Image (cartoon, rainbow, N blue to C red; front, side):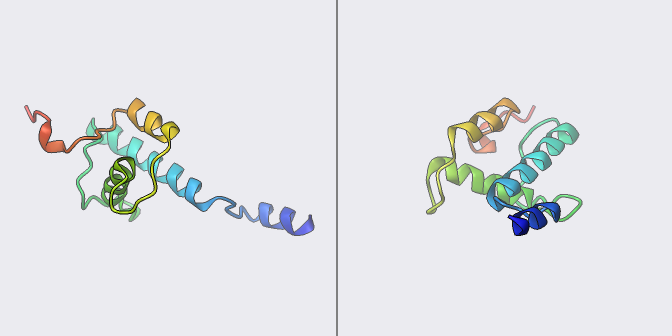
Length: 96
């Protein structure tokens, strides 16, 4: 138990996938606050070097179950939908 306490005190990441998801979701919310939408360009990189555009593309692939990606949970789909995440190709949206 002493090891667990030490690792926890060092802010050891017990679930790196969930931590990464949360971090990227926060970046997506910041993008939306700044740009007014979730239409992140594929090549978009945040100010601190996070490849948000790539992450968004991967999230869409996960929901579709394509490219051998793990499927996206309903909880995450709901979380993204609540902030206005666009699941379809952005070319389908009106740019007026």
